Image (cartoon, rainbow, N blue to C red; front, side, top):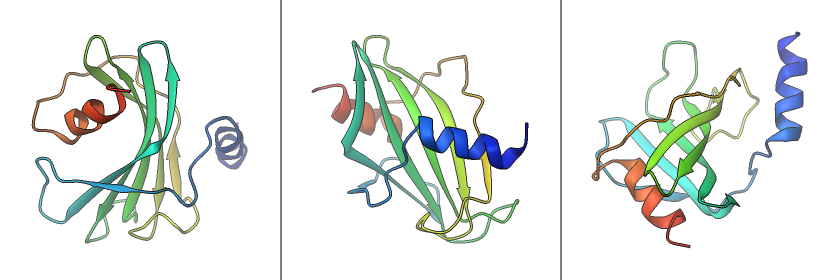
Length: 128
């Protein structure tokens, strides 16, 4: 399938917040990285939550991107997460055109430490 058609289909199925109220995450950061999420836009389905995370980098990464928006699903009972889709952008605020995408969501859930950005997100979105 043409990659542009795939990106278009995913953009219509999984809405990306254009002007999100990004909240900065401060847990366990690597130098040159900043991560944000939008607690206002959370999809809820029983004990599952889905949310966009914006990862911004000071320097261009291999592949020519400086930011990534990742759509994560959280299991609030098992305290696990998995990625659903990733969109790569050439600018640090993910405001430009998408230059790459990965839409094959992870089948496996992953654990995360209590001092990670995932724990910070989970604590916020799973408490609602």
